[in-house]
Length: 164
Image 1: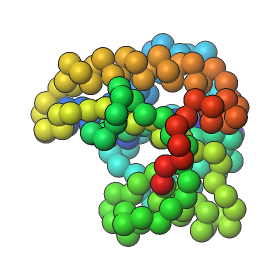
Image 2: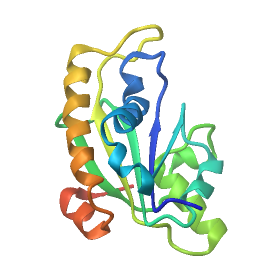
Image 3: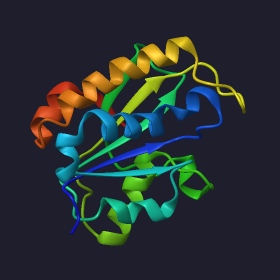
């Protein structure tokens, strides 16, 4: 049986701050065990076309990734389906994954959100930067509060403007 919420943390644990997405999943497993009956977790290096099928039968989906474009320690936005340039590449954006879902299932995807955590160092073999550790801590506190509710309306209230 599919759990109502999917948290998808993606990134490479061997590339410094790129590990932020998967590290969020580790935090949930260790510190938010009470949400695990309602939450599936998925991790990968990058988003692929096949990940569109992971959205099926979900009430909410949270993508988590590192980003150099964050204005704050983290940004939380609602996603809309969009065919961007990543649609035909090896690695896809979350919005392109939603577009694939919409195309193959002939229905809108479930409410999907992106938590981008500010990172700054992405070199192979580096550990997490000191700033990224602080950003991760702030993002994990936010996720703990977020996962206390399986209500897209409450998630929308916490998000900034929609993002493609």
